[in-house]
Amino acid sequence: MKELDEFLLTRAMEHDSPTLLFRLACEFLISAKVIRPGPVTVVKRVAHAREVARAETFDRLAHEFTDERRAGWTGCR
Image (cartoon, rainbow, N blue to C red):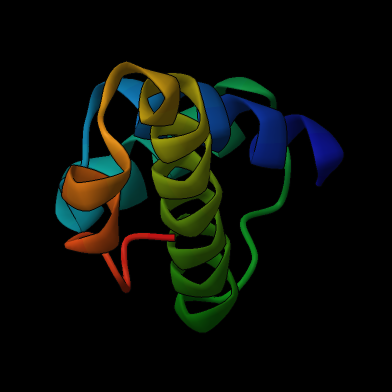
């Protein structure tokens, strides 16, 4: 499942749509010939990937903005 997590994180950095990420995860599992886990497990992995991608995006861009601007982003990280 680590491969799925890495795959999802890469895709979540590009797309934020949970529906798209879920579909891509299912396609990944099929192509990797992995017995697909239940939908709840996949949804949880998608949610985790989105959270990590959001934090990574914030970390990559935070230095570009002023402290005042960053203060308005409470909840983004």
